[in-house]
Length: 199
Length: 384
Image 1: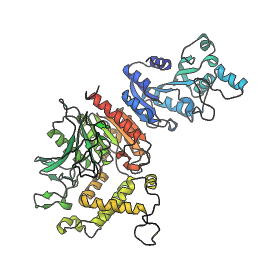
Image 2: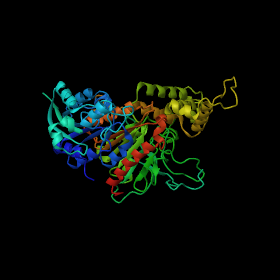
Image 3: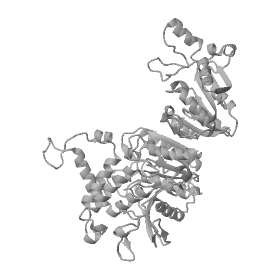
């Protein structure tokens, strides 16, 4: 099976030999792929139902609650800290982003863009909370409690003195189109950022 | 009693006693000139000796970890839920060794053994052995069995401490350490519980300063009390509540000081059966070995530094309702391993059974345990 496109983009941003921490590593797919490229590290995951998959994939997985931050890790102990499609489910994304910048030399953060035109349309004209392919839950049962737009995220990065080194904004099929290039906050469904604390 | 041996059992097994004539010097400074180690093994050692797994027992455990000694046995070995063909520690893939630790009372040299210098049982004069001493004696057994390197050393509770000590004492002699429901050292509360247990034993009039064998006596009351207390700390409030609630032994409350509730009856039964097959001096010794375990002491109380030299990959498992060695105690181990970049996997299993959960076939626990052991088996070339 081919690798999910956002994972491929993340992988392309990470050089061989790097030490990584994958926050919310799910079944270990990304780490397993990275390990095959000579990249090592740990996955953190709160839900141990997929730990067997991680173990089968040879991934070192640690059960941990990201809402507690990353107190078990020292400053700048990883080359990259990855947070893929998990930011919106975190209690305090601003706190976790600070933790990512503390523990990692660089952070890679991917999230669903709530500024996508379909979301805007559903709220503006439909008058209901948006439901989409990337955000399939209803407002009352969604784990995605802190949704943001591309614009919001970049504002937070700027407030936290984070520099954006790389950005990839794609549609739900993880493809970039003319729209995602020209008006990413309107046409992008999935946003990926490579960030670094401005020194 | 099994009518037939279950298909996933190692079946009928019998122990082997190894007599060792090479003296062993113990951490306390004393030494044993010779000693016996009794052990059981299940499965076959492969040609390159790479599939050997050591199981370390906890406080009241022994070498009989799996299978049955006879068709009359009421229960199989203490960790039969995890050891056998097709089980997490799959005897189709692994050669599994479990011994009774030195100082035990089930066949290895301990307080009930005859002291060759006096021709009487050692009793309280048996030297106090530590987790390090156990690991050193287990290494002697490994040499005898021609095992250069364990595929894994596995243990729960006090057994998990031995697995950790193995990784510290003999970094090159094991590839994996499975540290389950353990702690890097006892807390004041843990030691306090042990002290109550010891006080119960020592204050029994039949204890005779530990020389009860000379009087043909057993400190039943004291040892029974110690076991009752231990048993309570191994379970959780929820587990006890679910099993017994406030169920009465008889139809109505008796308005007396004898048994009213089922839990009282259960504790009495547990302690009465325990005292008939466990030695009080061994119980005292095991609790001391627990209290003294603190490998970081030699490293300026820095656990990360203590574990810095280990080479074994680790699986650490804790259970949410374990209040004897809570998940936070496992976090200490995991965080120390993480801080020096060791290979570690950590799972916190949702379980209501308390500390004893490590002995139970809890589905998520065994799923993870099984996957991890499969990975080790693959490394040994036992499975594709």
